[in-house]
Image 1 (cartoon, rainbow, N blue to C red):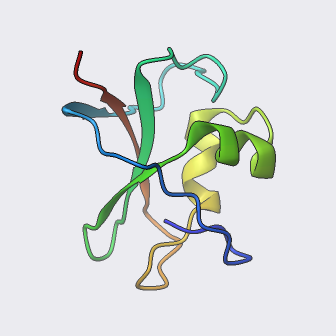
Image 2: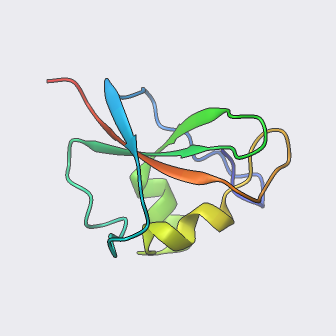
Length: 91
């Protein structure tokens, strides 16, 4: 996933397991634990990309995760229907 201005938001590595953020909790970028990785899934092509939390926080601020999905753009150009993923790094 990329920022609308073309800034690369990718994380250096992918997590071991992940889950989709359901939008019921008011989690923010800062509230994610140190071993959790933020990711996005495209609603159009299904592409999954993992994001660097520090870069996301610097570009968007401490956003609620449910509002962050609409700000991401896939490589295919889609901005609608994207989903936020939360992954756990292996120990």
